[in-house]
Image (cartoon, rainbow, N blue to C red; front, side, top):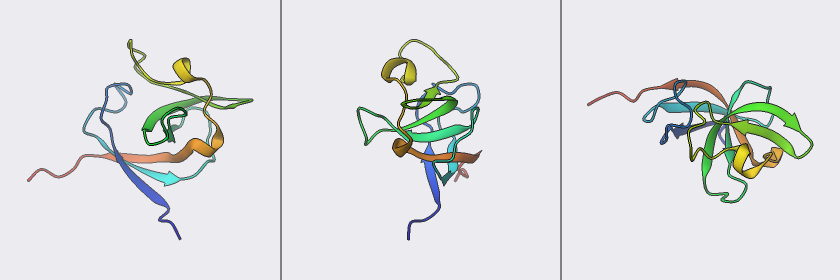
Length: 101
């Protein structure tokens, strides 16, 4: 049995101001997505790359995922199209900051 939660760190600025580099995320493994939710998904062309994006709308080919900060170079559905449901990993539950030592 797989653990129902997944932890990920935000590495880029594509989700500013909602999420910042260094934020940690806890997500529930699920493919049940609603528009407006932040999801973890595999990049369609690079399955080892985990993306953190906002689900905008459902399309015939899957979910249209966008960055909150559409700065030049942002990697989202505007560059690779809809993401198939099988590549959705989870839905964000909350973000947290790791304790400083």
